[in-house]
Length: 68
Image (cartoon, rainbow, N blue to C red; front, side):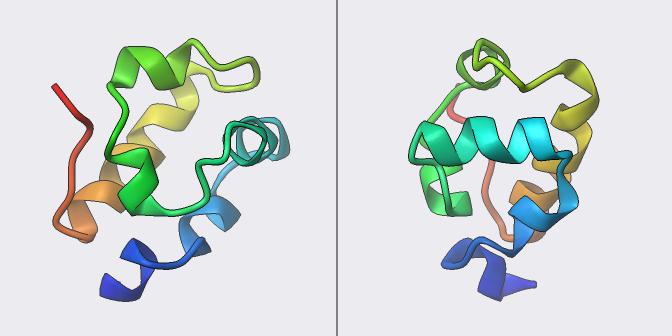
């Protein structure tokens, strides 16, 4: 799953509102996602608490994590 770090495959795991929220914010790769804190991502309209486990797992699988 290392390819997800450079690609956007993780977006397909999300609901349409969550995927749209990330795309609208320009967050289309796991590397870009890792530059944000969990709080910043949750503040995006369309991202809810249910999306966070999926995002955390995708980051972890790629050897990344949210910024602290």
